[in-house]
Length: 272
Image: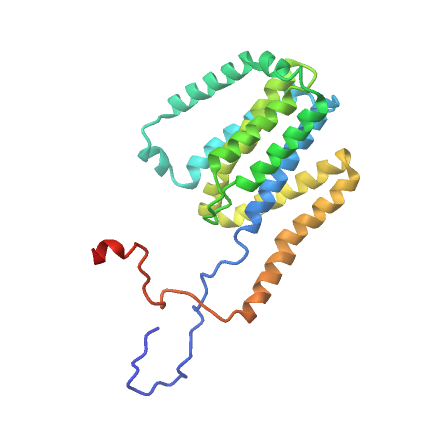
């Protein structure tokens, strides 16, 4: 709303209408962090179930394949197939690429199974833990941080999956584990960004689904670790955003488009 400053108005000078800050987003990054933590937790739980023989690899492969097909269709339905029109790739090319990748991964699954036979199991577990931690640190959560690197985050996650897959009983288990890692760490973040941009309300529901899945499977792996993990999710989703919003009351400097222009480039080339 614009006011004529040299005429008296029927409202105070600091008046704002109801539309003020209606597009303000709060707590926009916590859902991404929660999904990423739960994704890593679900991946570790899947590996433990397969290692203990509680999860059949054939069932996991079928479920993962169905989930990938649903995600593929949903990805192109959310934007009205605009991405397909801008891209030169066709659905046939996507299907061919998926077939080549599955065949290639299946052919090298015996290599994955025996890749780290000369390395102790404790070292493998430590490497996998550090790599998954690096995946969480370097993942791009959308905050434009300098440390974020999608390539590095994906590479360390794949390395962790290879380490864990090498400790599974059979080559088929290693193949299914590698496929699950690609689905969780590579394909899902792409669909995640699309859902967040086009369907923000459903994105919250997907976040809750991930949280319940992780909390449902983690107690079977470690009942002691499930409680701190649940407290961590509550802190990230509720306590930390509430505390951050509360701290805004004590903020003294407010930055926005009303600030003076700042020259980003060096002045040397203008003075020379």
